[in-house]
Length: 497
Image 1 (cartoon, rainbow, N blue to C red):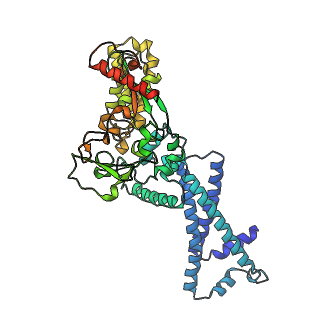
Image 2 (cartoon, rainbow, N blue to C red; image 1 turned 45 degrees about the vertical axis):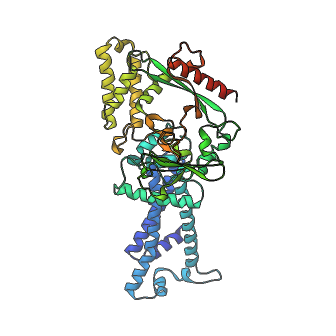
């Protein structure tokens, strides 16, 4: 067998072009088999090696196969001989002699052809499987996808493959994703991409094909208590509590409505926004019981034109726009670490100084990490020198924690600084819910969209010293006590429905 293979290789290596093709095809085949064995054994895990194994080597293999017949064509044209004469020159009489199942050469060509098809099919399947892995998406183009990879690894969906949301199911989705991926490779190669990557990502598959594979509206019912802790900038970082009962109902249950009313199958919400950025609305339409739509127009933007192709039907990602790649607000990031105990609450001014440390610079990680360390150590050395001995471990842990926070959320190379990617889940800084639920979006009668907070949650505390302040009795007859009693009654009424 080995002798037949070598004879065949010598026969097709008719000139330099043919020899080059044989060398490329053979070496790339052997190299891919070797690297694949290393990947299966767990020795190679790097995404760049995967690109070499599943993209570069198969490409070189195909180029090598193409060069072999091309070499023959060129040699035949230059020699003026027929194909039969060339075959008789390159191969023995026994190899060319025909029998009932064809000549030895014909069988050899067929065997190699089938082997090549099998090899390329396996390589293609392995390539597609490799490209479906999150590590490929996040690290193959590290300079570009570094911010997304950093946030993905600490997200609620860190065990969900990127392709589950960004590609979806079906051949059409696969083809679209590969075409889009090809353009992305070209953009990276020739530095055509924008920094930071613009949002929203309009190539996402519809939420009903992705999100609702795991989360479906029929299961959106009941309520959930969420307690949010913010800390003051005073010396003891005084905690303030906001406790909400989130009404997560979809509206199917009689007498109930809540946050997921917007995407219930019986309701439809459409809208158009300025520049299709999904931030400032031009108008919002809500489907009525008779099938018609009631429109609320933004009275501040009545003269602005828009592209009718930019009209959008609301779905999950209109609120959960950072469901995976979550970039934190710096104040919230510090509050969260104090609550978890990663930042020692007993350190004086820990909230204020931690916030200052991670927002004092926008630069490369090594420099930023040093700035964070210098700030924290410098503050306590100057103002509380005794703590450098008694609380040295807490200070060191605080520095490490803040460096991790910075490196996850801030990426100098892609111009990703604090606040570049707002989170619409909530209503900070007038965003989120307040994009639609505000006094500027009015119907023809001048009535605005409802914006009562209690439509979506009951409020049990709001920047209060205790987490359930409004469940207690009000202590005095002022404006706050009236609101106190109202919120308490609203919660009790909702609870018994």
